[in-house]
Length: 342
Image (cartoon, rainbow, N blue to C red):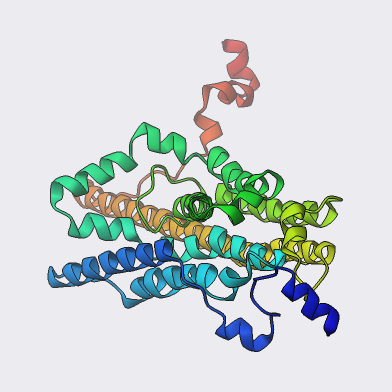
């Protein structure tokens, strides 16, 4: 105890040891995130109110997804224990990274903000939004071969460049890091979920491959962090001199495991959801095709009945197999006398 008191007196000014109780009671305040949450949530709820006044139905689940889950998880990631302990514990920052990269964008996309904006804005602005979404530039920027690598590469840049340590020393870098994680995540889920208008609808089979690549990317990132022989942000953590908790090396291993496991916990259910969507889409397409065939058969039958009524009760000639009328085969099956006469 005397040794710990000496270390504490030596300059450690971070939060106290993390316990289960402190995981629920530790909070910090981020004015920029708070302002964004209040602005985004206020605009969304005002738009929902306006949409319902005009008679456009807007399910409560969408508002709960955007405001309650999406913005709520943003608050938890940046201002709860993960925000309070991210400057001190590697694994706390790893958990924050996954929530900002995958969880927050997923729920924001499920809230269908683009559809809501088009619904409540004046017609010229709605047309402008739709035209922008359908533009060639939007199709290029949301091309799966571009969106997915960005989603996978950004965390690698955060953890394996000086970006990681700059997060601790500059509030501007910290806020830009939050944005850099959420933006590609939102683009990823927006284009794959397809609940909002998208530049181009890709088959769900493509979505399955893309989601699989993302899940593998999270696993590779976690393994790379665990296997890195050097301490990521080592100079910062050593100068911090945290007197409690896991060692720096073990803390980094915990962080790598968090990136791997938590990323898969989010990614694998989404992969299963994509598979379900693909099956349902195939079933819907099959139902449409069956309906068209049934309508075509009914039309043919009605035309045949009408023709029979006009011509008379004579029975129509029996259907002839196609190969008996195909000139490529008819000559092969002629009687020998006919072939000689030819």
